Image 1 (tube, rainbow, N blue to C red):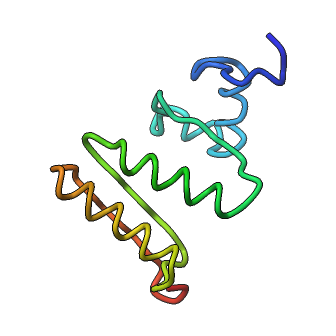
Image 2: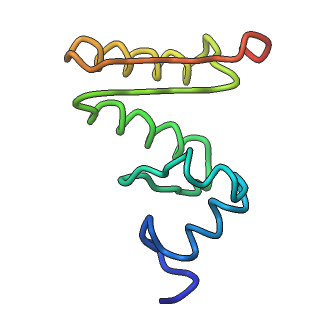
Length: 102
């Protein structure tokens, strides 16, 4: 398997090494990775927030948003509207913001 694989698999040695580096070997049995997650890099904030809103709009069960800054600006209002739409569809919506940053 190439080290640049886009899907190394949750049980792959590469992911296990990363987990141990982040959490340490002694936490290995207490913290488990879950499947279905991914990491993406975005070239612009417009791309990032567009993708976030698309994911919120596609949610069918849960939305969990944790952010340092949540402002009352155009982007914040767009995110808020997407979260409200999700809640109106019966999706469980949870938001955590930093009290200092927001």
